[in-house]
View (cartoon, rainbow, N blue to C red):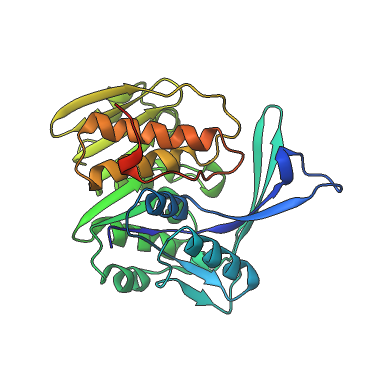
Length: 297
């Protein structure tokens, strides 16, 4: 196993052809979750990727597992919970951006525990990837996230701040999780919201313990702080159809380059390539070719 990702995946309900939520809408059902997006994209890029979580023992959970398996993701570690449901969210595309409505309280994934983490990581993946979303689901899910980032072995953490999930302690909790990780992804704008940092360098001054810190500045650039120095690569210019999932795609592209021991500039370019493909798509997924076939020079 190259990568194990851990976190909640919900069923995403979205109108066909980018329409609004109305009584006349026709809908598509798709898995939607940051960590499973990363696993699916890494599998498309040619890596052995697994996703671990808890799902309800319901048809929505079956839908998620079936879709991820079709993308080549190993879902054998997923726990089914007969007493809790699989969560759902609705996307409502508008001319001013996509609004998202979550129905996830009391979900199966909110009951993830440190004991789950111990069982999942016993399979010794090369790298574990998790995001700050999991830490916001419940106290026990927060404990499980802390157990993940503090485990022996390589850990990748995407800050992925979702303000509507937090009650006020996000800055402290997310900073602690980032500092305990080996690889950290964070948006420049979300870092400013959380901690008042103004630029990539001030983010690095704050999050100073990880070996790798990647600061994404939307359509401008990505900046990485690594043992070999500071690296900057401009973002790919694209016509944006839907921005949801682009950060997950960037993480998958960068991690693919990391797993293949590519140089840092190539890692950043792979991140931009994957993010651009998702930005051009109406969903938060894109059908990427194997990493070896991608020209990013």
